[in-house]
Image (cartoon, rainbow, N blue to C red; front, side):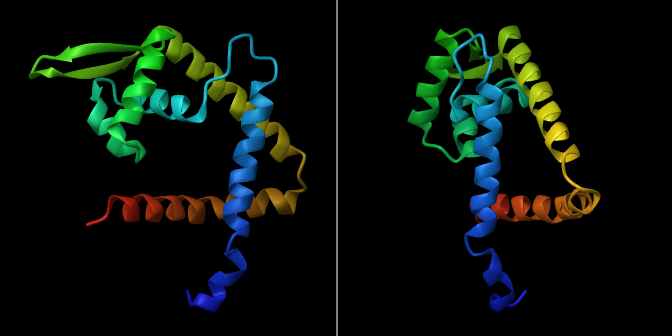
Length: 154
């Protein structure tokens, strides 16, 4: 795509994506009976739930965060009962991270509520807008993959 073809997307696409994400988070926080988790906490919990036994360094790399930032998040989530640390049997100086049942239940609830919210809001759109969103999903996935690959670097 030529640069002039990409210009309509300068900031508007990123702004809309961030705005949708922010509004979804706000709506999901309504009615919570427990204190809300920060976005970084949720990202780390989702990563650990999907990769049980991941180490702090690997989690930091995957989340593009500094190791000490992830260590702080881990300490907070361990304190709150959402993560469990185990000594790595292959390297006693390292730990492996595991999501607790409370974390898995909370993530499941959040995913169910998020899916319901998105389904509800998409259903409010007309058929043309729903079709446009469905048609855009593959391109948005490729955009995410490109951003991920570029962040990984050579």
